Image (cartoon, rainbow, N blue to C red; front, top):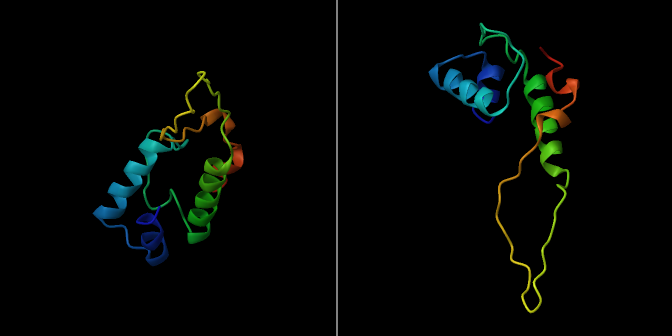
Length: 97
């Protein structure tokens, strides 16, 4: 999103923008159809900001955790990546499409 936002703001769609958009779309599946017009995926900076806010809100929600406690041992901290189910994403996530 940090590469995509300035490109949208300046309306400059260079190879770096296209590459960043492709990487983002691999991570966050978006209902765009078979042919993608990279000029129209995100039309305004407001669309980018809205998308970023929604992503941040998804990552801020606490995930259910199950702790196994072994007698005599403190629970170990794990650094697992945060995973968000696509089922939890509302249709407002793609409001600009």
